[in-house]
Length: 300
Image (cartoon, rainbow, N blue to C red; front, side):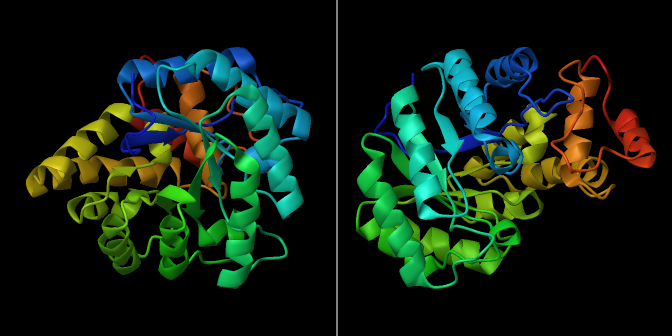
């Protein structure tokens, strides 16, 4: 079992949340997906992020999701849950649930909808979250495409210097910024994880401590091999795995109007869940489903 003092690293999967037609969490299917990923040997599980549709679920279903994951994963793997929301108060309410349920890690973006733009706003959010978190450790998360706000390198480093975070996930896709974050963050003892699949190989070769790839929901073995190659500095092996990553992204993420629908349909082809996405997101198109069927064997 991983020590609580060991930095987060490796392949942490942002797990999808199988839902029923009424957008309720399909606990049985969710459990099967979690067990499948742990059996594959991933280094951690992240529930309730954008891939997990956390901000789209009702409060009751969000709680059902985090409780189900807690019951299935238990202490066998680091378990992270997203607490991103539209205001500090809503974030603190989610943190209170995680404290009660017994989580170790909470992943936090800047608040959104009325986007927070300044470092002062971001620091105020994390200060309040840190005060309320108790034993729950905060993980900073930069995902400008969803928050319309950039968690700047200077701000992340300020969070690390204050002892508020030991880990950051960056999904900006900005490789120069990622390299800067790695260089400056490592001096502060910060674990840096890449959430951008397209640049994940380059990020690992630049010294990233791990990756959080959505396509690992479908094919975790590819990303485990990518991480091992990157950790070894094997550029040729990284390039080989990245070719497969590119194929996966093309069919699962980029082929339809809703990137998540392709992932969930592919997981359903593996016998887990219905492929449904939370309303009003659009289901995978016929063309996208055809690409997925060509790429993913049902019994994989």
